Amino acid sequence: MQNRNFHIFPIVAICAALSMAQAAVGDKATLPDFNQSSHLYGSTVKTKDLRGKVIFFEYWGINCPPCRASMPHLQALQAKYQAKGFTVIGSHMQGSSPEIQKFLKQNKITFPIYQGLSISEAQCPGGIPHAVLIGANGKIVATGSPSSLYDKVEAEMAKVTSGYAILGGLELKKYKGLTKIVVSTGKNIEAKIAPLREKTDDTEAAEICKTFDAWVEDEKCAIQGLCDTNPLEAMVSINRLKAAVPSIDDFNEQMGEFQKSDGLKKLFDVQKKVKALQATRDKGKPVSATSVNSLKQLLEVAQKSSDVNVQRSAAALMEEVSAIEPAAKR
Image (tube, rainbow, N blue to C red; front, top):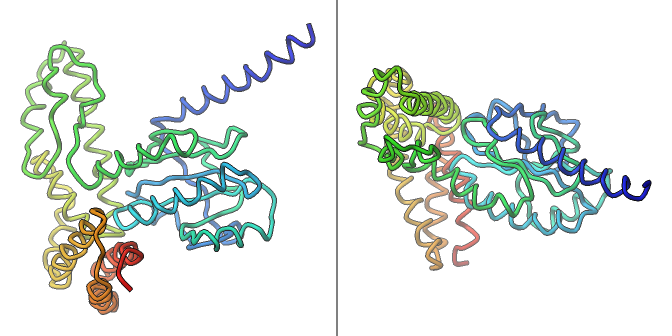
Protein backbone atom coordinates (compact mmCIF):
# COMPACT_ATOMS: atom_id res chain seq x y z
CA MET A 1 0.00 0.00 0.00
CA GLN A 2 2.83 2.35 0.80
CA ASN A 3 4.46 1.66 -2.54
CA ARG A 4 1.23 2.35 -4.36
CA ASN A 5 0.86 5.73 -2.64
CA PHE A 6 4.47 6.49 -3.50
CA HIS A 7 3.66 6.17 -7.19
CA ILE A 8 0.41 8.09 -7.02
CA PHE A 9 1.79 11.18 -5.31
CA PRO A 10 4.10 12.30 -8.14
CA ILE A 11 1.24 11.90 -10.63
CA VAL A 12 -1.02 14.08 -8.51
CA ALA A 13 1.75 16.65 -8.17
CA ILE A 14 2.33 16.67 -11.93
CA CYS A 15 -1.38 17.08 -12.63
CA ALA A 16 -1.54 19.95 -10.14
CA ALA A 17 1.42 21.64 -11.82
CA LEU A 18 -0.15 21.22 -15.26
CA SER A 19 -3.44 22.59 -14.00
CA MET A 20 -1.65 25.59 -12.53
CA ALA A 21 0.17 26.25 -15.83
CA GLN A 22 -3.04 25.97 -17.88
CA ALA A 23 -4.91 28.28 -15.52
CA ALA A 24 -2.26 30.96 -16.10
CA VAL A 25 -2.89 31.14 -19.85
CA GLY A 26 -4.94 34.22 -20.67
CA ASP A 27 -4.15 35.91 -17.35
CA LYS A 28 -2.50 39.31 -17.23
CA ALA A 29 1.12 38.74 -16.25
CA THR A 30 2.54 40.57 -13.25
CA LEU A 31 6.18 41.13 -14.11
CA PRO A 32 8.74 41.01 -11.27
CA ASP A 33 10.78 43.90 -10.01
CA PHE A 34 13.91 43.83 -12.14
CA ASN A 35 16.17 45.25 -9.45
CA GLN A 36 19.90 45.64 -9.79
CA SER A 37 20.66 43.28 -6.91
CA SER A 38 19.13 40.34 -8.80
CA HIS A 39 20.76 41.17 -12.14
CA LEU A 40 23.32 38.58 -13.24
CA TYR A 41 24.23 39.26 -16.85
CA GLY A 42 23.39 41.17 -20.04
CA SER A 43 21.39 44.34 -20.39
CA THR A 44 19.09 45.52 -17.62
CA VAL A 45 15.37 46.09 -18.07
CA LYS A 46 12.63 48.07 -16.37
CA THR A 47 9.05 46.90 -16.16
CA LYS A 48 7.72 50.09 -17.76
CA ASP A 49 9.97 49.55 -20.78
CA LEU A 50 8.38 46.15 -21.48
CA ARG A 51 4.89 47.49 -22.15
CA GLY A 52 3.73 46.44 -25.61
CA LYS A 53 6.53 43.90 -26.03
CA VAL A 54 6.32 40.15 -26.55
CA ILE A 55 8.30 38.51 -23.72
CA PHE A 56 9.84 35.03 -23.56
CA PHE A 57 10.52 34.50 -19.84
CA GLU A 58 12.59 31.40 -19.10
CA TYR A 59 13.30 29.70 -15.79
CA TRP A 60 16.64 27.91 -16.14
CA GLY A 61 19.76 26.75 -14.30
CA ILE A 62 23.46 26.45 -15.12
CA ASN A 63 23.60 22.82 -13.90
CA CYS A 64 20.68 21.77 -16.12
CA PRO A 65 21.85 20.34 -19.50
CA PRO A 66 18.50 20.99 -21.30
CA CYS A 67 18.61 24.58 -20.01
CA ARG A 68 22.08 25.09 -21.42
CA ALA A 69 21.02 23.54 -24.72
CA SER A 70 18.10 25.95 -25.08
CA MET A 71 20.20 29.10 -24.73
CA PRO A 72 21.51 29.31 -28.34
CA HIS A 73 17.92 28.93 -29.59
CA LEU A 74 16.77 31.73 -27.32
CA GLN A 75 19.61 33.96 -28.52
CA ALA A 76 18.56 33.28 -32.12
CA LEU A 77 15.02 34.42 -31.28
CA GLN A 78 16.41 37.51 -29.57
CA ALA A 79 18.50 38.45 -32.59
CA LYS A 80 15.62 37.86 -35.00
CA TYR A 81 12.88 39.74 -33.18
CA GLN A 82 14.38 42.08 -30.59
CA ALA A 83 14.05 45.21 -32.74
CA LYS A 84 10.42 44.40 -33.48
CA GLY A 85 9.25 44.49 -29.89
CA PHE A 86 10.47 41.21 -28.40
CA THR A 87 12.83 40.18 -25.64
CA VAL A 88 13.97 37.05 -23.87
CA ILE A 89 14.46 37.32 -20.11
CA GLY A 90 16.21 34.54 -18.21
CA SER A 91 15.58 33.80 -14.54
CA HIS A 92 18.29 31.62 -13.04
CA MET A 93 16.76 29.27 -10.47
CA GLN A 94 19.87 27.53 -9.10
CA GLY A 95 22.66 28.66 -6.79
CA SER A 96 25.30 31.22 -7.69
CA SER A 97 28.26 29.93 -9.70
CA PRO A 98 31.16 31.48 -11.65
CA GLU A 99 30.16 29.12 -14.47
CA ILE A 100 27.08 31.26 -15.21
CA GLN A 101 28.98 34.26 -16.56
CA LYS A 102 31.49 32.05 -18.34
CA PHE A 103 28.78 30.02 -20.09
CA LEU A 104 26.76 33.09 -21.15
CA LYS A 105 29.84 34.84 -22.54
CA GLN A 106 30.90 31.74 -24.47
CA ASN A 107 27.45 31.55 -26.07
CA LYS A 108 27.35 35.30 -26.77
CA ILE A 109 24.05 35.75 -24.94
CA THR A 110 22.78 39.34 -25.15
CA PHE A 111 19.42 39.17 -23.38
CA PRO A 112 19.09 39.99 -19.65
CA ILE A 113 19.59 37.30 -17.00
CA TYR A 114 18.33 37.72 -13.44
CA GLN A 115 18.57 35.55 -10.33
CA GLY A 116 15.45 33.91 -8.90
CA LEU A 117 12.78 36.22 -10.34
CA SER A 118 9.27 34.91 -10.88
CA ILE A 119 5.99 35.74 -12.59
CA SER A 120 3.31 35.26 -9.92
CA GLU A 121 0.66 34.00 -12.37
CA ALA A 122 3.07 31.49 -13.94
CA GLN A 123 5.66 30.45 -11.40
CA CYS A 124 8.25 27.80 -12.09
CA PRO A 125 6.52 24.44 -11.43
CA GLY A 126 9.76 22.89 -10.20
CA GLY A 127 11.28 21.33 -13.28
CA ILE A 128 13.49 23.42 -15.56
CA PRO A 129 13.79 24.68 -18.18
CA HIS A 130 10.30 26.17 -18.08
CA ALA A 131 9.19 29.07 -20.26
CA VAL A 132 6.39 31.61 -20.16
CA LEU A 133 5.37 33.45 -23.34
CA ILE A 134 3.68 36.82 -22.79
CA GLY A 135 1.93 38.63 -25.63
CA ALA A 136 2.22 42.32 -26.48
CA ASN A 137 -1.06 42.84 -24.61
CA GLY A 138 0.59 41.66 -21.40
CA LYS A 139 -1.36 38.41 -21.22
CA ILE A 140 0.15 34.94 -20.85
CA VAL A 141 -0.03 33.11 -24.18
CA ALA A 142 1.49 29.77 -23.20
CA THR A 143 3.75 28.02 -20.70
CA GLY A 144 5.87 24.89 -20.96
CA SER A 145 9.17 23.63 -22.29
CA PRO A 146 11.04 26.30 -24.30
CA SER A 147 11.06 24.30 -27.55
CA SER A 148 7.27 23.92 -27.45
CA LEU A 149 6.88 27.71 -27.47
CA TYR A 150 9.26 28.69 -30.28
CA ASP A 151 6.58 28.53 -33.00
CA LYS A 152 4.22 30.52 -30.81
CA VAL A 153 6.76 33.37 -30.71
CA GLU A 154 6.49 33.72 -34.47
CA ALA A 155 2.69 33.80 -34.23
CA GLU A 156 2.77 36.50 -31.54
CA MET A 157 5.22 38.60 -33.52
CA ALA A 158 2.97 38.27 -36.57
CA LYS A 159 0.21 39.87 -34.52
CA VAL A 160 2.48 42.80 -33.76
CA THR A 161 3.88 43.33 -37.25
CA SER A 162 1.10 42.32 -39.65
CA GLY A 163 -2.55 41.50 -40.00
CA TYR A 164 -4.13 38.53 -38.25
CA ALA A 165 -7.52 36.92 -37.71
CA ILE A 166 -8.80 38.24 -34.38
CA LEU A 167 -11.88 35.99 -34.34
CA GLY A 168 -10.03 32.89 -35.54
CA GLY A 169 -10.14 31.29 -32.10
CA LEU A 170 -13.94 31.28 -31.89
CA GLU A 171 -16.05 28.27 -32.88
CA LEU A 172 -18.82 29.98 -34.82
CA LYS A 173 -21.82 28.48 -36.59
CA LYS A 174 -24.13 31.33 -37.65
CA TYR A 175 -21.28 33.74 -38.38
CA LYS A 176 -18.56 31.33 -39.43
CA GLY A 177 -17.34 33.63 -42.19
CA LEU A 178 -16.23 36.22 -39.64
CA THR A 179 -13.41 33.96 -38.46
CA LYS A 180 -11.61 34.81 -41.70
CA ILE A 181 -11.60 38.56 -41.04
CA VAL A 182 -7.98 39.67 -41.01
CA VAL A 183 -6.72 42.86 -39.40
CA SER A 184 -4.56 44.80 -41.81
CA THR A 185 -4.16 48.38 -42.92
CA GLY A 186 -7.18 49.56 -44.89
CA LYS A 187 -9.68 46.97 -43.60
CA ASN A 188 -12.71 48.30 -41.70
CA ILE A 189 -13.74 45.53 -39.32
CA GLU A 190 -15.95 47.70 -37.13
CA ALA A 191 -18.54 47.94 -39.91
CA LYS A 192 -19.00 44.16 -39.85
CA ILE A 193 -19.21 43.98 -36.06
CA ALA A 194 -21.62 46.91 -35.55
CA PRO A 195 -24.79 45.11 -36.79
CA LEU A 196 -24.17 42.29 -34.32
CA ARG A 197 -24.42 44.67 -31.36
CA GLU A 198 -28.14 45.04 -32.05
CA LYS A 199 -28.73 41.30 -31.72
CA THR A 200 -29.06 41.39 -27.93
CA ASP A 201 -30.60 37.91 -27.70
CA ASP A 202 -27.95 36.26 -29.89
CA THR A 203 -25.27 34.61 -27.71
CA GLU A 204 -22.92 33.98 -30.64
CA ALA A 205 -23.13 37.63 -31.73
CA ALA A 206 -22.48 38.70 -28.13
CA GLU A 207 -19.37 36.50 -27.97
CA ILE A 208 -18.06 38.00 -31.20
CA CYS A 209 -18.57 41.55 -29.88
CA LYS A 210 -16.93 40.65 -26.58
CA THR A 211 -13.88 39.18 -28.36
CA PHE A 212 -13.66 42.16 -30.69
CA ASP A 213 -13.84 44.66 -27.82
CA ALA A 214 -11.16 42.77 -25.88
CA TRP A 215 -8.92 42.84 -28.94
CA VAL A 216 -9.37 46.61 -29.29
CA GLU A 217 -8.35 47.18 -25.66
CA ASP A 218 -5.34 44.86 -26.04
CA GLU A 219 -4.26 46.74 -29.17
CA LYS A 220 -4.50 50.07 -27.35
CA CYS A 221 -2.30 48.72 -24.56
CA ALA A 222 0.29 47.38 -27.01
CA ILE A 223 0.33 50.64 -28.99
CA GLN A 224 0.83 52.70 -25.85
CA GLY A 225 3.91 50.62 -25.14
CA LEU A 226 5.21 51.23 -28.66
CA CYS A 227 4.61 54.98 -28.33
CA ASP A 228 7.05 54.93 -25.42
CA THR A 229 9.67 52.73 -27.08
CA ASN A 230 9.37 52.75 -30.88
CA PRO A 231 7.28 55.59 -32.39
CA LEU A 232 7.90 54.36 -35.95
CA GLU A 233 6.21 51.03 -35.22
CA ALA A 234 3.58 52.84 -33.16
CA MET A 235 2.56 54.89 -36.20
CA VAL A 236 2.07 51.75 -38.26
CA SER A 237 0.02 50.11 -35.51
CA ILE A 238 -2.10 53.23 -34.92
CA ASN A 239 -2.96 53.49 -38.63
CA ARG A 240 -3.87 49.81 -38.72
CA LEU A 241 -6.12 50.08 -35.65
CA LYS A 242 -7.86 53.24 -36.85
CA ALA A 243 -8.53 51.62 -40.22
CA ALA A 244 -10.04 48.59 -38.50
CA VAL A 245 -12.01 50.69 -35.99
CA PRO A 246 -12.67 54.15 -37.49
CA SER A 247 -14.61 55.34 -34.42
CA ILE A 248 -11.44 55.24 -32.28
CA ASP A 249 -10.08 58.66 -31.46
CA ASP A 250 -7.28 57.49 -29.17
CA PHE A 251 -3.68 58.42 -29.98
CA ASN A 252 -4.62 61.51 -32.01
CA GLU A 253 -2.29 63.67 -29.96
CA GLN A 254 0.61 61.21 -30.21
CA MET A 255 0.08 60.74 -33.95
CA GLY A 256 0.03 64.49 -34.51
CA GLU A 257 3.30 64.81 -32.63
CA PHE A 258 4.90 62.00 -34.60
CA GLN A 259 3.78 63.40 -37.96
CA LYS A 260 5.33 66.81 -37.22
CA SER A 261 8.76 65.24 -36.73
CA ASP A 262 11.04 65.61 -39.74
CA GLY A 263 13.45 63.25 -38.03
CA LEU A 264 10.89 60.44 -37.95
CA LYS A 265 10.07 61.01 -41.61
CA LYS A 266 13.74 60.51 -42.46
CA LEU A 267 13.88 57.38 -40.33
CA PHE A 268 11.07 55.84 -42.37
CA ASP A 269 13.47 55.78 -45.32
CA VAL A 270 16.14 54.20 -43.12
CA GLN A 271 13.61 51.63 -41.92
CA LYS A 272 12.88 50.60 -45.52
CA LYS A 273 16.58 50.00 -46.10
CA VAL A 274 16.85 47.96 -42.89
CA LYS A 275 13.92 45.77 -43.96
CA ALA A 276 15.54 45.29 -47.39
CA LEU A 277 18.75 44.06 -45.73
CA GLN A 278 16.73 41.76 -43.46
CA ALA A 279 15.00 40.27 -46.48
CA THR A 280 18.39 39.65 -48.11
CA ARG A 281 19.70 37.98 -44.95
CA ASP A 282 16.56 35.85 -44.51
CA LYS A 283 17.02 34.51 -48.04
CA GLY A 284 20.46 33.27 -47.02
CA LYS A 285 22.28 35.80 -49.16
CA PRO A 286 25.34 37.71 -47.92
CA VAL A 287 24.79 41.25 -46.68
CA SER A 288 27.29 43.98 -47.49
CA ALA A 289 29.20 45.21 -44.45
CA THR A 290 29.33 48.61 -46.14
CA SER A 291 25.53 48.77 -46.24
CA VAL A 292 25.28 47.80 -42.57
CA ASN A 293 27.90 50.32 -41.47
CA SER A 294 26.30 53.08 -43.53
CA LEU A 295 22.97 52.56 -41.78
CA LYS A 296 24.63 52.43 -38.37
CA GLN A 297 26.30 55.78 -39.01
CA LEU A 298 22.94 57.36 -39.93
CA LEU A 299 21.35 55.91 -36.81
CA GLU A 300 24.18 57.04 -34.55
CA VAL A 301 23.52 60.60 -35.70
CA ALA A 302 19.75 60.17 -35.20
CA GLN A 303 20.27 58.91 -31.66
CA LYS A 304 21.84 62.27 -30.79
CA SER A 305 18.71 64.13 -31.93
CA SER A 306 16.99 66.48 -29.47
CA ASP A 307 13.68 64.79 -30.46
CA VAL A 308 13.10 61.97 -27.96
CA ASN A 309 10.84 60.13 -30.45
CA VAL A 310 13.65 60.13 -33.00
CA GLN A 311 16.05 58.88 -30.34
CA ARG A 312 13.77 55.98 -29.39
CA SER A 313 13.07 54.96 -32.98
CA ALA A 314 16.73 55.20 -33.94
CA ALA A 315 17.68 53.03 -30.96
CA ALA A 316 15.14 50.38 -32.00
CA LEU A 317 16.43 50.41 -35.57
CA MET A 318 20.02 50.22 -34.34
CA GLU A 319 19.18 46.98 -32.53
CA GLU A 320 17.66 45.69 -35.74
CA VAL A 321 20.74 46.59 -37.78
CA SER A 322 23.03 45.06 -35.17
CA ALA A 323 21.10 41.81 -35.48
CA ILE A 324 21.84 41.78 -39.22
CA GLU A 325 25.54 42.44 -38.78
CA PRO A 326 26.67 38.82 -38.09
CA ALA A 327 25.53 37.92 -41.61
CA ALA A 328 27.47 40.76 -43.21
CA LYS A 329 30.59 40.21 -45.27
CA ARG A 330 33.74 41.18 -43.41
